[in-house]
Image 1 (cartoon, rainbow over the protein chains, first blue to last red):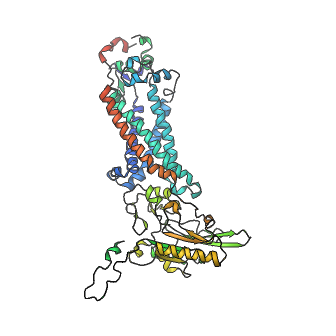
Image 2: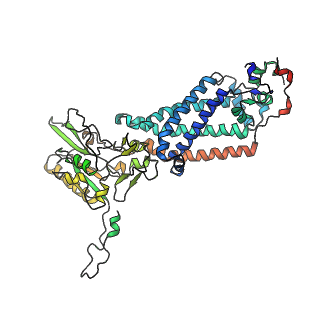
Image 3: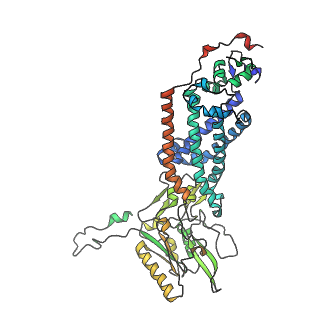
Length: 218
Length: 299
């Protein structure tokens, strides 16, 4: 929202260095969690754990990677929370979601820095993350859960994979959108910047805030 | 087990029939624990430690004769002592040797994600292979009897092996060998079941225990450790022996329907994304629509 978002080369800064670092800490830890988690999910994928140093190592490090991921998500929550808040205008965006899916973006309502789909994605990750953390702590220290509280373990073994599967669904959409589908998005998370046209076409309200509102007309 | 292949088929220079020929070998082993003749001497606890090379660990005194509250990763055999008041006001000291039940449908094995860490032999023994164990502890959640225990030092899970090493050599488990009253028996499942039922009938008919019976819970497909109880209708009185133990329903849900639903969803997601790209392709913003003007950068 400030002049510092307008870069000397005419591009617009979408993600600061800090934001990018936090994102990639979450990304790297998530990939490790995904690979080791899938190894524990299915015998057909247990070779992933073997490739990553063995089942014992994977089991030891998986919870730690989970903590790193969770901390990164909480920092994101602080960084982006206000921009990720839902608004009444989101409804119109969702009712036109089919245009978004068909790349008819001209038909879509104008959005701010994050569109409602991105908001849902983040909060999906966040709440699944909370469930994964709570169930994961139980799975991390099963010996600390006394026999009389075993229902907690029973709850954890089902909540953890369900929440993880939901995040994998979100991740598929996220990676697809961020790399193949929305050209320019991946670069914005690496070098931080997007073109003026990209910001104007896909995040008009945010673009207007940066360039000073005057360019609301096309 | 492998002994089955060593059954004699032919003998050289032998007159008469081959011993054992045509006899079907009973492969399923079973331990029978008659709680009505147990005196709580704990010889089985000591024998278990000795045979399995476990050192005696610290005991926990809790106003009872019991060694510790529950079995431990290095204490696989524990007699549970329970004072039980009967309906007529008389007191009974119930003693039940607690250890792995060697379920026909083991919850530990169902829950374990590590290749080959838990094996079930044809003879019914369920054994942990610690070199394959990754220490996740899922077996502890799958077990309905609270038996597998995690060793913080080894980072792996341990439990009673039913002395698989002794059994393969034709020996009885160490606990059986040490029992001075003969309340522990070892043999085939069919033999033990018969012996147990006879003893239960004896208790019902001659000893005034009208509801004496055999504990061989069907919820886990039967077990390879069975009990004779004075009161089979109330196993909970024997240190929390569960009336109808089953693999927790969340473990079954997780290992069966959820696995397939999840796998289909994962594959469906990938296919859907690929289909979307083929149908609609990427969002490409035309860069030439509005060229950045020099004037706009500097306010």
